[in-house]
Image (spheres, helix red, strand yellow):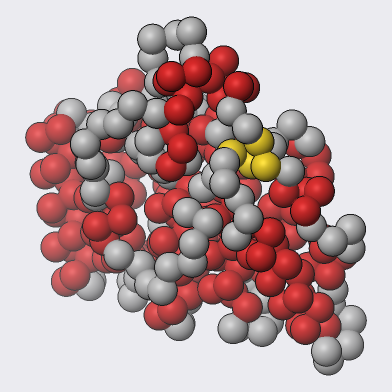
Length: 275
């Protein structure tokens, strides 16, 4: 995950054979990915590897040349991630959150060429956190990534955003690269909030729906996940899917139809949820 990828590949999240992982070998628990296992893994001090003014440069907005400082900061993070050989140390949560929030702002950068770079850097960073931190910190960036994947006028940014989401939803390679179900729940919550009347008519929504099909085998039962106001996450998500089913765009209707059928067959959403 520390290597850059050229464009989004729909096979990125296909489920491969189960692997015995470093975390499962080092853990006293029988299940993979337990906290004891992750604690014994070597951690990469990303924050210590970055220039002290990295966040300041990421937030630079003054002057016509300020974009160069933002680009320099993005390159420094990318370079530091290139030296990542294990999990990123997430023990210093406050500065890590500050860094991710600064990166999130670059997804809306006025210099459009920086936006896909920011998406790829975010994917590398969050894709190499332990699953608990991954799910928690992913909530910072899901909404702008989804918005870009659906609505950005530039195809490279839409693709980079989807690829970034794919990285965030997978546990680190060192832990087997399986889909992080806790991260998926947060992602669906963000998706429910981002799909509105405008998004249903967007060029990129069908690609998002097609991407969701690749997660089918690893989706939790959303009818069992509590959302808010007495509703389950499945009920809220079903409302969004119904909007997609009646979209004016044929590709969105087609992809959402396939997705709903797959959800029903795999126990992600029950038929009664749509009534």
